Image (tube, rainbow, N blue to C red; front, side, top):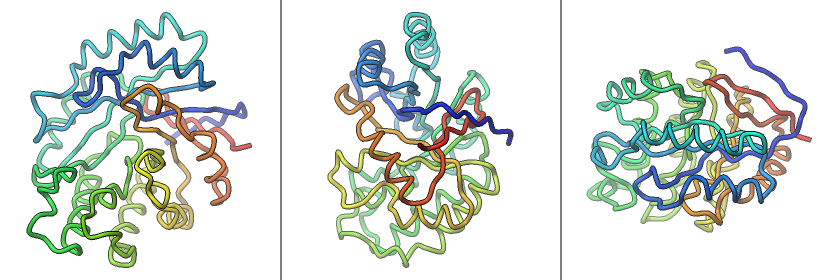
Length: 271
């Protein structure tokens, strides 16, 4: 995939939800104004589509596109505003997501796993009746199956999110390392990336999301494309810890972070 490299520093939040997601009431224009006040230079809205679970509550893409264009017209001279989406994908919903992707001029797509077999993690329906090993491995197996079939995405979102909803505590990484490594190798081979999701601070997790262990493995395997996103659903979290996360990434050996324009990665050197 063709990449553009820019020397100018970027302070970006590439995972923001607004009133167009069923779990947020944040007006988009207020989000833009707050991002400007926080000194962000670029943002990407990434509303939810989760076919298979929330079909009737998914983003109204036509209304969403109209509001993005309106905000770009009003504030485009002060901040870059990108059109994104978060696809909460499962293997049996791939066709529906392909139809959505083909209809709109997206800049950026987060591919996430929020549920498996139409059972959500945050309700613990998915974990019920399974051992800790079973639900952890099944989570990564689903991601791997999806990315082997679906390619119209930019980055994997909050890769080890299952840790947030593990009722039995932190599962040892060695128990899933083989699957995570296969996922990362597939991501790299396809020219895709992963995100660092700064909601880890909001949830008071002991590590980054994904963990430093996963980030080190990604870099060791040759992974370069990485975005930073707050996963904000409310105004105060927009841009949260973006600058701190860039410092963390540099300490882990990464040389750049990425933004996207019309699905093409743009590389920004870390200073």
